[in-house]
Amino acid sequence: MPYNRRKFISFLGKASMGTAILPPFISSCGNLADPTEKTMETGQGVLDRLKQLKLEGLAPSNKDDLLMAKGLDYHVIVRWGEALGPNASFGYNNDFTCFLPLSDDDPTDGLLWVNHEYVNPLFVSGFDPTKYENPDEHRTKEQVDKEMYNVGGSIVRIKQTNGKWNIVKNDAHNRRITGKTPIALNWDHPIKGAKTVIGTNSNCSGGITPWNTFLTCEENYDSFFGETVYDLDNQAQHRPSEEGWERFYPYPPEHYGWVVEVDPKDGSAQKHVAIGRYAHECCTLYELPDKRVVAYSGDDKNNEHLYKFVSSEPGSLKEGILYVADTVNGQWLALDWESQTALQERFKDQTEVLVRCREAAKILGATALNRPEDIEIDPISGSVFVSLTNNTDRNDFHGSILKVEETNGQYDSLTFKASTFMAGGEENGFSCPDNLAFDMAGNLWFTSDISGSKMNKDGPYLPFKNNSLFVIPRHGKDQGKVIRLVSAPNDAELTGPWFSPDGKTLFLSVQHPGEQTTDLKNPTSKWPFDEDGLPKPAVVAITGDLIEKLNKLHLLERA
Image (cartoon, rainbow, N blue to C red; front, side, top):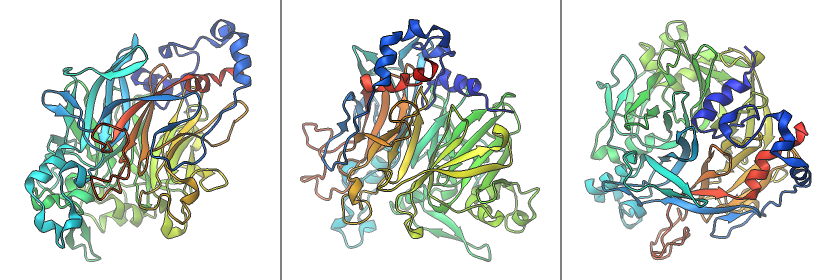
């Protein structure tokens, strides 16, 4: 079927419109009229001003602050440790965000979902491994308990009043999903003896469903409970984790590395085994006309792969087939035990294929990619955009954005064309693309993910300085240019860009400021400049005339 722009926007638009462009004929936006009424909506004066709009981007900066381009402003909505209610506080290292209005009539009152990816023990639990020759011998269960609470995700009711977004404290919707929350496996067969597992962690990016639930993705799961690795004889060994949680809670690594769905109404959660187990950066859905869904996700590790799940039943993330991409030949390869003899020779059943996705993908000849991270569907062309952050082992220091064009615009197609949309590097002014978002005019916004250990040091990343948020305008004088609009504090990366339903606010996470700190008395960042002087991850709301103007640039093409 051809790409159905109205269908794609309708389900995302009703849910939140985050990362989606709302065309003028979709009324749920609330601020765009029918294109035939452009004079009522904009007036000639607005069009004239848009034609003259020149974006004043920021120069690279290593200043310890959250810097905004002219025409933008921000305020902090919620920060690490802030109380959400009597028995809940906001977790650490906020990443992906998305927003669901509580009603279609009010875009300024709703639920903010926020991922909490990982912890810095020095800040969260007070454990400093640099003090000990054998750090593991000095870890305590109490420290690990604090760390387990600070991962997962938060549901926070927020409301905009007088231009400011604030937490609705003690609201019944406010809740935490943590490293200790029981979560069901959406699968008919137990995994390592369990159909319900304990907790979620490594929650990086995510997505949203057509039925208005949140998707949170477990990425670097092996950091907490290790991993099971197999030799050529198919013999298993346990590889220890960096954080060492398994010393106190010997949970199987196979219980982590999944896409997790969270119901905002009651906080219930399930892990979707059918989408496969690997370092999920995100999970981006498209609903087909027959209500089946396609789920795209990437494995954020050097030389790993791009996947898509195609359901065989309406509204299902369980019944269907998982595919992995051969981007060289433009083919989706079925990770299906019953039909693939090569998989039958290595694995005993489909469950084992899904648990050991990386092995299965390589057996079928999937293309090794340079850290596939966030994925978004271009609401104008229908192309699937994939961030390939970098791969220094291949001398790809700056990464690129991959464009996937499904055959005939059919998202359940088994063939496609892959090409580079834009490469990182000094010529294009960015490095290490990560999270992606489209606004209402189809402008592409994206963040960068230069490692804190390499940022502002001699080498290929020095010219870019701190991580940033960029936009590539779709229209107007700056069409096609990469423009830096926000610069992050020291050591931080900016993550989880998501637009409010009216397109006037960009929700954004400031993750791990001051991550390189080794002495709490001398942190490498002090953002957000609280009285205690400690850096804190936080979610901010970015507003201003510039966002509204960018969201209206598409009106020029209709003028």
